[in-house]
Image (cartoon, rainbow, N blue to C red; front, side, top):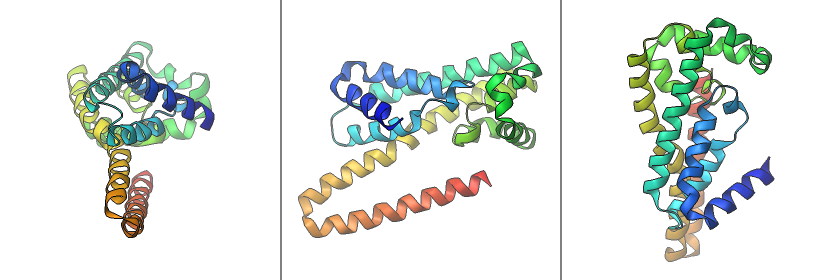
Length: 203
């Protein structure tokens, strides 16, 4: 998996014209039912944020393509739930992910519209929530509102850590060696804080 991530990152870096469409395909895949469990788009987006922070990539096409891919992926997953109905949750790989599906259904049952919005940020259930929303009869208009708003927030959130890390390294190189320790310590604290927040959300 790591070799795949390294190759994809190198391709994005050396083929900047295709960087936007590639990110769009990645976010589409990660938002899709079943595919989202297999595609490491989150890691690649963090690395892409670093390329943006270093000035290698233009952020505008990355953010726009990523947003479009995320919205379309969730929308298609939602319509699969609408068209197929409850039986979709018994499909092959999903049967092996019963716990994840159960958590997605409970999360949606409790929070409805907010589950669609915040579900995009919760890795294990991200690609399942839209289909659950379709199965459980959420109206198309309400779903799309949450889908679009969550995608607007999701792209910057995933790109920001890599961007800040790259900018911090650039700043440290200008300030001197002592600044590296301050930047490194700050990055560790921020990383631990983010891990705590995400782990707390999952429990």
